[in-house]
Each structure stands twice: as C-alpha cells, then as structure tokens.
Length: 236
Image (cartoon, rainbow, N blue to C red):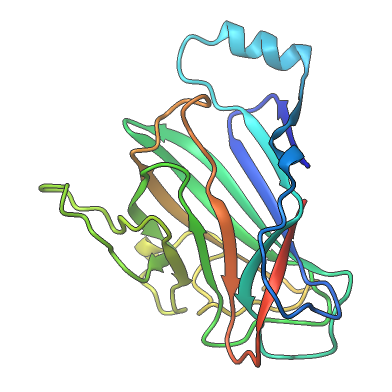
C-alpha cells in the first residue's frame, strides 16, 4: 500500500521507518504488490485555501508511507540485544526552493532501544526518481562524484543516480556543520541525545514545485561489522 497525505505547511516531508524484524530473513527482494500504485490522498480545506491564496512557490508537507519494500543493508555491530520493536527512521524535509531544485535537511533517528551504530558509522543511500544531482552538502559528504561531464563551470558534489552519504567527523570546521551533525556516523540507542544525526543537501535538476519534485526511492542504510547482508523493511 502507498498512502499520501497533504497538510498545510512550508516544508515537503518524507518519513521512512526502517524496521528490523527479528529473526531476520536472509534474502532480499522487492515485494511491492501491483496494487501499491494506488494512493489515498487526504487534503484539508485549510491546506487547499492556503495553496490557492499563495502566488509564489508553495511548500507543502507531504508524508509518504512505503510498505512492503525490502532493501539490502548491512547490520551494525551487535551492541546489546536485538530490538524487535525498534526501527530507524529517515526524515527528508525540504526547507526551501532553489532555481533548479531545493535544499533539504535529512535526519536519521535510531528508535532502537537496545542497538546502536558504532564506528566507522552509517552509510545512507538511495536512488533518485529523475536525473537529480547533489550540488553541495553540509554535515555529511558523498562518497563518489559520478559522471558530471554534462556540467561546465559549477560542478555538483555528486551526479550519481544512486548516491551514498556518510557522516563527517567531529572535528569538522564549524562553518561546515549544521545542528545534530558530524558524529563520525555513530548513533546511540534511543533515549540518548546522540541517537539522531542530520545533514543538509542542495538538490539540483529536481524542479522547484510540489508537482515537479519527486522523493528518492530505494533507501538503504549500511553499518559496520556485519556478519551478513540483512534485509531492511521500509515501514511508516
């Protein structure tokens, strides 16, 4: 099932919960059902009035839930017992529009009470829905630039269709940080102030309206010292 809900606000939000079922299966497959393409859209009257009354580009808050997607990830070190009810949630917030895209703050929340992610830390990946690029990033970095040969002058940080982002170390210069960033990829278990991490990216070639922007697909989260490649269920 896929469900979209529109509510009033300035930002465009995606929240994906990565649940770690236990015991974990050993295979990874895309289990989307054909009926997944259908969507239920709920719009409040206040939201529609706000959209109609604004002449410029309007941000809306969109919550998209993805069920029955299976992605291959690598488990983190086993610090503590397995957490059957915990999950890792990725929140994607568009903060402002740019001439060819938007600026987003991405936050990773570790809602597992008995498992943390140790050094050298998490690696977050996804697949772009269109031909988006990452112009710049603050509080994290891309691991590969990819083929940016179509650009002249100003070159993006990453042109890969499936970029991978890693955290910055704690000694990152202050002007290259945002709030809650730069922990070397380490996430404590839920309940600690260090159980979340954020970074900012400027996305280009994405369009700059709610109708043209597409959220990324196929999120993956990798962590160190795993014994097996473990599937991760995207839930919401």
